[in-house]
Image (cartoon, rainbow, N blue to C red; front, side):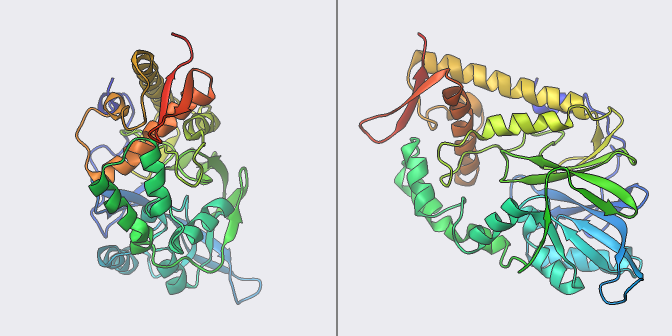
Length: 362
């Protein structure tokens, strides 16, 4: 089944509701759903506001009432204006007391610096994500530049005009994340973060980003899943130039195990798409989806040795622009690497400098 058909098998408590940009929708008491625009084919991101109270930063022995922000949107004028409207219309005169970022990708991290500075609020995120954001913001990026060009070329995407565009994308990250806060509070796997008097457990995830943190509140039966669990599209799982022999897909599938035992009643708040129930069902769908793609790749590689670029039509049945190709290539390498590192494919560097994959058994 396609992802869209699979998504219909899930339960959507707010199926007929969608917050407008700059507005909120309460999905649970004290949990507000925000939706900000993105300039991509994936045209939105969900952000979350959680009613909170923390020790006052300057008044000893007192508590500060306010809000914890989970993820921020990209830094552009439209998103700032939407946040200003949220502040005016929906914060009830209370401050943002904490900015929590699930991972370093621009749509999640972009406005963290602005929100933290505006509210004098601390940034909370994992160390790997924070350091990766600093590296990307300083120009050491997975998203463009010469190392990325060489990586793609080694996997068969060597069209001159396309690679020139990729090389020019060295400033892609900084265009949406112009600054990173100078300090942060570290989140680690299985940490407990108390938000509004309730305990939320950090669930680490890998494969999509360096050390993604989802948040689960058992008492409230809510999971803020970030990009690790989405209802209607599969999470992008890519191998990048900075870790050229990575096994991102295996890491991602292993990470899903940490969410498989959640009750069917758990309200999942994803970064894209609508809130849903049925986490275990969705994980089973995602596993089946990747199993199908891996099987198709294995069959294709049994006919002839394929580069990651050669394998794109096996994995993607639609036309791709250059922006989409960057994600598709990373996914293609990730699927091939899982088969290669699992011993089902062999990888050889051909005389033309391109890695090609073939079956270990004919």
